[in-house]
Image: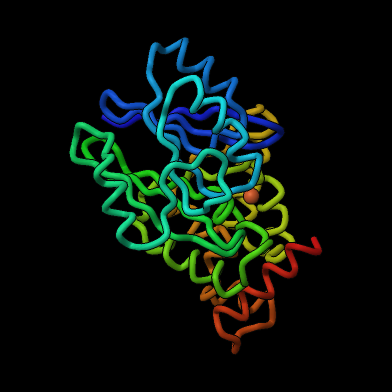
Length: 261
Ligand SMILES: [Fe+2]
């Protein structure tokens, strides 16, 4: 039995608590306090922290949580505070499997997704009985958008998104920030005549007006409305007047336009 609980932290970050059998795993604790309160309220013990990247708003709670709970911390960047296991090569994936926290057959898969920083990774939990799979993408992929290229390269981020696009369409996306409304405003600005994008923007506006989170969202939804996952889409390419360009060129243009938006 796998359950995911969202904990808003900082201004617009999402930290996630994953219950996997008896084990409790936390993704990107940007603040220790909401996590500690949750653990106490629910009487659970923290086994593992998974960090997607080294930015403070994703790992500021690491040291306190480790001090209080003695949990293990995993990430792909040695700059992550108090990290125990740095995922640097394929062997590390097996290492993570050894720590398999689940009593059912599901395992956590690490997917390297650099570009936002030079050492981002995402975490994917396979689908199982009454669970449709979950992707924790940090700041690589957002609902309606993707991360800025801070340290890595456009090519790295483009390749990272191609890897995430290949996951099963029913996967639920749990990303690092509530940026969805801004992202879909940009998407509508790109394609003002797209009914699909306009409808998605309207849905997101209603959710935010009700103060609801827009996360999680199905990858299938993102594949039809997130411009950064639609670099092969004829309508988007036409709107950008880039019908003869490569997908990578379309992606680069989208990312540059979003930076200026
Ligand atoms: Fe970040």
